[in-house]
Amino acid sequence: MNKEIAVIFDMDGVICHTNPYHSLAFREFFSARNLAPTDEEFAEHMFGKSNSYILSHFLKRPVTGEEFLQMEEEKEGLFRKIYAPYIEPIAGIIEFMADLKANSVKIGVATSAPRANLDLILSKVPVRTHFGSILASEDVTRHKPDPEVYLHSALNLGVAPEQCLVFEDSFSGVSAALNAGMQVVGVLSTHTKEELPPCNLYIENYIGLSYDKISGLLCPIPPNS
Image 1 (cartoon, helix red, strand yellow):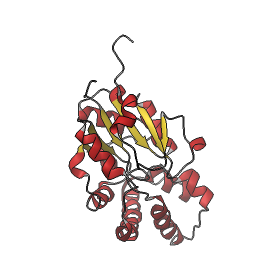
Image 2: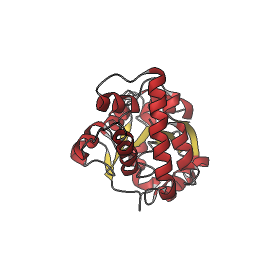
Image 3: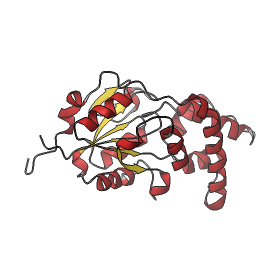
């Protein structure tokens, strides 16, 4: 089997179950502005969305430029403060990544979150050395569902898009991977199977998952097939 294959992980809801803490941070952020979004509104307009979209949607006006940067840093600073004592990887992912690495699979992370969030999580979850590509929101100009971050990841890892398997938990994230021409595993930490675009496989966590169990999804498409 051709070993030139890659697995790319989103971060929020895929490496760690961060979304409840993002919700708490956004609630505090919006409360200071006399806004109180419902759980349903958060589910529809926060999870898997860029901060630019979230802020503009809930504030009901475009948030751009310096104002956006200041608001994003305020909210993400709240998130890091709230989440820092509770960082814990989704069950089984450390062992799964180690097994991928042992089988010569190239590994990357591609998140829409700021790099400071990624650095915080990677300071507590011992997987940084596995990554051949690390991309955060600062590294792209177009956010998910645009495929830019996944196409850039494939380029960094030296593989074609069709040789990549992506782990995602959100509608926009799964859409981004599909738009990049990649195979997708839906991680059901945030949404149900019915709430995501069709994926090649669905998992609740990584317990018992191994290279052997997903190798069929990682086989590159033969030329002229």
